[in-house]
Every structure is written in C-alpha cells, then in structure tokens.
Length: 243
Image 1: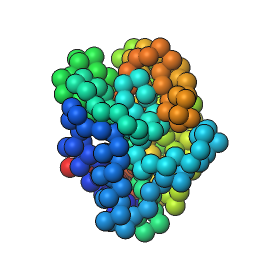
Image 2: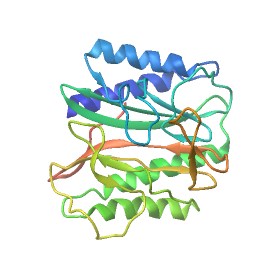
Image 3: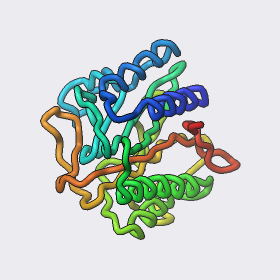
Image 4: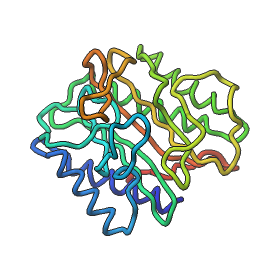
C-alpha cells in the first residue's frame, strides 16, 4: 500500500501549492484528475455512490470551503482571500487504496482558523501515536477526543475514520470520540484512515442541496486532517506522509 500512500501525498502536496486567491475548485479537481491519469491510478470518488450520497460523486476530490466540513462537491467557485479549504483525496494504485486530507487557508489567515486547523493536526498526531499494537481502537478515538475537548470543541461521531484496503471505506469505523481500552484490538497489518474534523461552534451538520456537501448547522467554519496509517509490530506507519 506504500505506492498508493506516496501518490496520495504527492497529489495533496501539489494541490496545496496551487491553492491561492482566484483558484477555482474545478481547476483543482482537474489537476488531480490529470495526475491520476498520468500515474495510471484509479479514483475512489468519481463513481462512488453510498447510501448517504444523492448520486455518483462525479469528481476526484472533495473540496470543502468554510462552513462545508466534509464531502464538499467541487463546483464553479473561485476561492477568495480568507477562505478555509479542506481537500480530501483517495485513490487506488495497483488495486490498493490510500486516503488523506489537508486543510489550508487561502491568502490572509484568521487566527481562529489557524488554531482550528492546528487542533485537527494535533488530534491526528495523537490518534496516530495511539495506534500501537496491543492497544484498542478506543485508544485512538480517546486520544483524538482529548485534544478536541481541551480546545473546547464539540465532536461529531457520525463521520470519522475507517478501514482502508482494496476499497476506500471498510471496517472498522474509527470515531473521533471513544473510551480508552475499548473496542477492536489493534494488530499488525491493520490499515486505517484516521481523520479528525471539527467546526468552530457545533458538532451538528446538514446536507447541502447538492446532495453531498456536509455543512455545519450554525455556519461556523470547519477543518479536517487525515492520514492512512498501518499498524506494524514497530508501531504506526504513516502511508500518506507529505513532503
């Protein structure tokens, strides 16, 4: 799964360099589409149609802006100064999947947005560090929640991390809140995506009329950080590390 992880990291790195005031979300999706084609990879999103989606997704990225917290469907929107953009990307290389997400600020940052992004990054790192063989799945969820609650944030557990392998979404579900020492034992060979996401003011969300984009119910901005990691005998291995 390392090649898939490296490629996903490369795509997100390239996209983060392309984000600027005046960049259109459809431009970012096209860049990712071309990189997938050039690599001979396969998008996990374009034909994806789970029960919570209104139709096949049709794009290769999730681009969530400001109060869009997850599953943002790329559309004809040009980024403006101060926007917060989360980019989530998953694809398969040689039949194996990797999944990762980043959040970046467009142009001039707001201190509160920078702080929110850092909380998601710190929570992600805490979750990764808890992914030790012999621990339980709840140890990961507890570690994520501890960072979030210390920052005064509310936690939605409807959407979180998940198993990754031949498909993008599999068991186990990895919630962003849980009880230490409970749940599935973590054994070498388990590969999961860990993905803390939070909004400034709420854990409540609703679905945009596009049938996909999830938005915070109070209009507050969100941030999202994600890595695909493998549990190994020597501890967690991040497969989607970005340079």
